[in-house]
Length: 209
Image 1 (cartoon, rainbow, N blue to C red):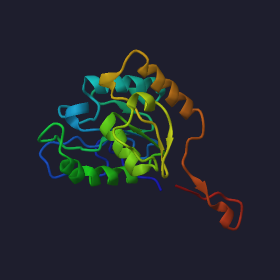
Image 2: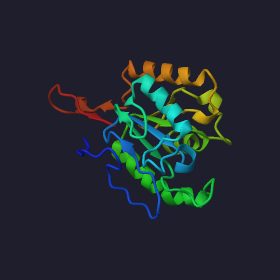
Image 3: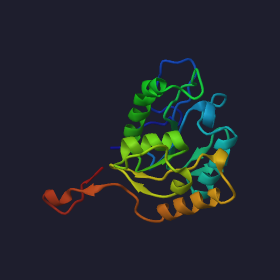
Image 4: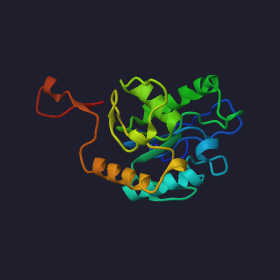
């Protein structure tokens, strides 16, 4: 199923119960979904676009080099990618309480399932822990080791997960590791689909997630 919309910002009309929030941004039919923490960590309260603070722009540069953005800045030009946060509202406290994350998680989950990207790219410890716990069969014992996980692949339940260390913590090699990993991934068939056409008459494929 394809989402039909010409809206890049907030394509599904999310309206959370808070005064300031940063909605999802990008291709509503993206194959790659970049998942951040919240606006006070990765930016966007001034621009309305995720990943537009200093750390976010560092990530944007890597995504552009990997072919997931065609232009960077306050309104990046996406290429088969979507950007959003697990906590889209500006939190009253930093870090937000667990109950605050719980309150806004349904907005993130609804958007994630509407886009149905094949690859999830969680950025930072909190987003990575949430994605691994919720969308894969990889249980966590404590915080994820982001140095070990950075730019590696983890199979999920219908998704491929590629965790990204928070750009504010990057050293000289993290950019290149991420770009190399994403380029390699994009060069192969990364789709998480099954062909059920074998159960139907005729020779046509019927691909499902």
